[in-house]
Length: 285
Image (cartoon, rainbow, N blue to C red; front, top):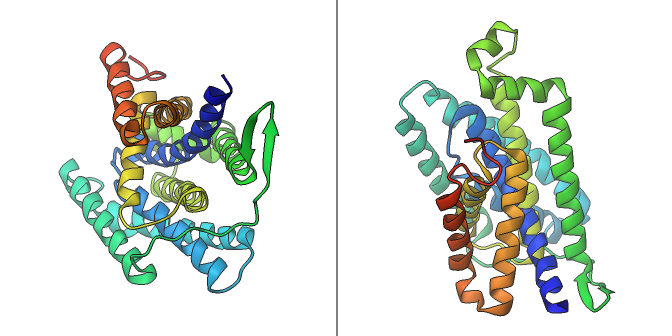
């Protein structure tokens, strides 16, 4: 039982990262109907940037994360303005091709600026807490708490603020939102800024817990879309549930079967859910 609890804790930590990736993806997809494949590479850019600020310029970790977040916000705005806005009203295949091209472009920028070496963001969180035989490294605990705070903040923003209500209005009925006075040109900018900021946070978590390396972004965005499908497209609670289910499933598979099969088992669980509930765990029929 202790080993099961240990793997569940591990799964919650990586599940929190998946949730942040999925929240960024589901916000963009819900508003614009765009599969933002570059989201994983953008997340890795945020992680690389944080690593650079900490190791090369000697910034404290929190300051480095804050600056990376600000850069991420601006990058999200630029991506919407320069990449997706010109093809917004074109055929969906145009946005699909732009998303794939943007992925390769961001990956190339990461390689050019930061190299091809695997890097780990250094932290001072080295303590290990023990709760009844279940050990929780300090860093993993902070990752879980940070993910929970970001999820809560995102939920409050979408549900309680005027901007969040405008985002939901545009997602539900763009024409009606225009009639109600919503500035539909500004909303996509806000969505991409928030999405990219969440991605940067996820990239920092991956870089601190594991490592950042070329190609990780693509795998991360695939997991993000798996979470969307598992939890239900366009559903924030679904993204949370789906991310935790996927993370815990992977951790249990790695702990009790083999880490080589954790991805396979996780996707088997996702497919099994879709066979019996095609709209996902929290999606509408």
